[in-house]
Length: 184
View 1: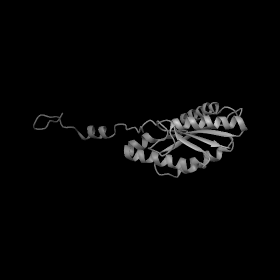
View 2: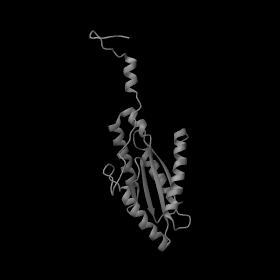
View 3: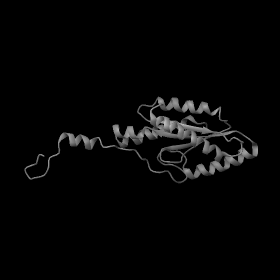
View 4: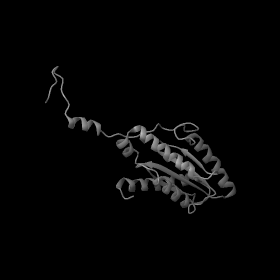
């Protein structure tokens, strides 16, 4: 152990590099309220209201709708390599790309730290694949290591969007497991 003249311990290069390589995670603030100032999307409270309104429209007019849940992945890697400020910029870029890829009749809201919910009106589950592929392609073209995992579903009976949310959640969790395993 090396000591300075005043008796304080001197850190070795290996100890410094260990400090610099300490794991960094990117944790944006939890969204709340009607809008999300970080990303410019709607917030979870407005999402709940929109989902309720759309549920009534789907039930009354028997129109198709699809719910998609989009989780931003790879943010810890971006934060570890480039730092928290760059990770936040990457997260905001992904959010903006998501918002650009939806139609004006659709809705997007940040409902959790790294998760967005998208309501695709007048879109059944099969047609929603176009949205999913558009989003994947747009995000893949972005520089950096951030990506997305997506789960989507339409109500099986055309009357319950909350059921579709649960199905979309299950699909998202399955895709996140594949991302974690490195399969995609």
